[in-house]
Length: 288
Image (cartoon, rainbow, N blue to C red; front, side, top):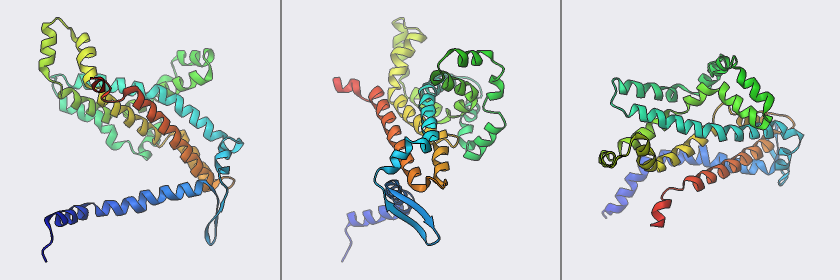
């Protein structure tokens, strides 16, 4: 009996993705499910293996106790950094993309230079750069206005700004993918629109605000989400470090660390929801 073409095509298709499916089940889905289970259990590691005793939401309560003070501090610092870093990275990426979109010599070389950090910025590399002062801390330490900020502003506002300046070079390292996405969006804009606007008397400034930026709204949305996720999974992120420290702590362990990880996920989900509400692709088209 001959096999139907649809069945044959399905078998061929699944044969290409079966390795990914197996990897997703054992390397992604299983750890996620186990982390949920750990977060509602008191987990202890004994010689015979992992022992769990159901504790409900007690692990989440530990987050707000003295044992979770480092985690909450790191989380507050992360929220302050996100408010500053995401807009700065987006603005910087747009400016660089506009410059690289011009007809200049060695344009391909400069595009490679800005994307190069994306390739080499692994966890160990970033840690080594930060430890050697390449993040910009040494360069900015001589600026007296940072001391003035710390002395005049509330620490909740001043600390994220000072940290941003101290790690300004590392922040710009996070702009490689965003620059490429903005650059591809710029190249898809019809040049005739700019010509028509120029005939009507629009200058470069008006063209940017009336043509360029609205045309890239969806890409801004994608880059905002990408930047947030990138900062959230950054190897030097204080929240991630706090979760790791609690994971191997005798007093907290896997259960509390899993609860902290899921609380962090909820915070990130809320931040992503805010980005969706702010940019919301196709909002104008829905009105039409």
